[in-house]
Image (cartoon, rainbow, N blue to C red):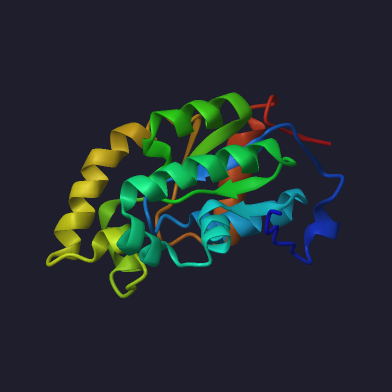
Length: 195
């Protein structure tokens, strides 16, 4: 069963929006997908889902432990299964891991069943957010900044394929980020409509 996070503000939002497709937040680690995703779900009055949290729950292990024990290819296969399952469940806001959107199969599934929103943040914003955390398995290298930079440069062209792009500048509050995402989504009535 999916671990759906509920927020006490949902009652305030119910009836104001009609979500037609699951909104899938994509982007680099540190872009704000989880924080913005939770607040967006609360604003829209829909469930918040997190693919990484679902994977950890199913495996009873953390993402770094899965990477260490089973490797990245195993993790990516499980990630694709979880994303597919979550998109088939009720509509909501889905936060994905930084590498999820890079997989062509995931992009296809997301495009067919949801709408992707890239939270685009520049490299310095991302570095400031992740440099003091040891929960990022891909940054467990001798030079984490260089690793992040290489990942950023490789991933940005793929993230640019997302249905919508919203700037995450590192200075905007979460509530204002949600305003930006909602504005972008309202430009797509096939995804979101205001009642």
